Image (tube, rainbow, N blue to C red; front, side):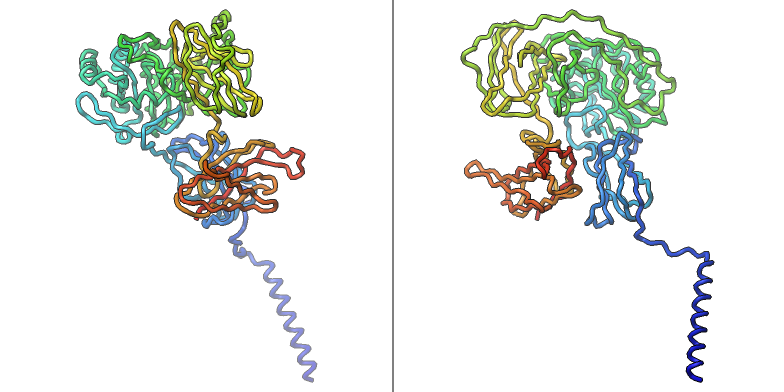
Length: 597
């Protein structure tokens, strides 16, 4: 009897369980979601507060806010978007790297959806320095002729744009354009501030007298010598417009001969719907295309105040319309930033139409008409300079590609031997009377300077060139060498945290970084996001009195450590390699995590 009861109870229990399972199938209550559910892929968009897409920003994605485990890395494209292909857990974080100077990011950004949008604010740079079109401007204070101080950061709190006009007392085009600038300023002074800055050494009394004589109604101030170096090939007048977001939005070199040109530009940059952008040519904002005024290229009365500072100012990408008229025969494989490649003297090619590189999203009140393209008159190819070689048997010898000066007489040229292997270097001479003969080609200045991409044949094979003087008097030419970032001569500073290293395919020279120990400690490098066996990583500690210490990443390992004394500088070399030694390894971006403790 008890046996039958137990069998019946078991059967009843089974029926109850079956009914429970069946009722569960019809339950509409959703299950609790898995908190670790991955997004199959996501995008991270990075833009400025002004709506400008930021290209080239590094985006590191981690599983959570501890940033202990990295999932993926990508770089933003021209639309400011980085595509993350690996699965990302909801609650993962994105960390930004390699931001343009002047943009401020948070420590990390939480990823909650497949599309993460990040907006960055700008912050004016703290110190005066070189600027390029699109850069965040540096903050500054100038005191006008009435003793009033004007600070850029304060002006941008109440004005929609700030206009800088660089000028000097004896500049004829400056005098000619001031009445038009005064007229336009009168109409837009509620939204725009104009600061006329004189950096040429005129004394304050002369500036004050000029202001009174010409009836300038905007603040006018004396600028110190540092202002002459903020742009390349500075000529007068130069007009720079800083938009409401603190970025260099426009630069124009040369006199402007109508108030309407200024007014059209002011209307554009003060429009309520203005979106952060850059405009390369102020004439692109004109409704009617009128020719730009002249640039003062004549010698001023005082020879200590050159009108064009080509011979004293380092080039940058800032100046508008500075492309060489000669077409380069070969582009450099990795040219330094801001250094155009100089080609042998040829007849000019047709110049491109000057359109903005980043077209404004919102047009001015009246849309500017398309500027017509005009083909320049074809010039006759000039005769190449041919001076007298004065040292055929006693060349000037330079050991290493370091800057040097050379004195050359009028109508003469000198033979120079450069002794040292170099893969990439750009020679620069900034003088209108200089010319260089290199590998059978003659190079003459374009926009006041010569740029030549150079490559030596070997360690003991001198690189030969001749430097000539086409002027009428003896001159001393300063010869400079520019190197791409990441070369031995121009290494990148390694920082703690993640570093993204770009390596060329089968790079036998490598990408160079340096790290200086602020205290005694251990530097640890860990290879991430790529097979460590395809990475060649060396750390070199050099001492002039001792044989350099070299530490290499061992095969099968992804981590390299080295002890550094306080003040020691380590040279770190990264390159790609093929474990099979077939040299088929492609170019790669290596993510290196660095720590120092």
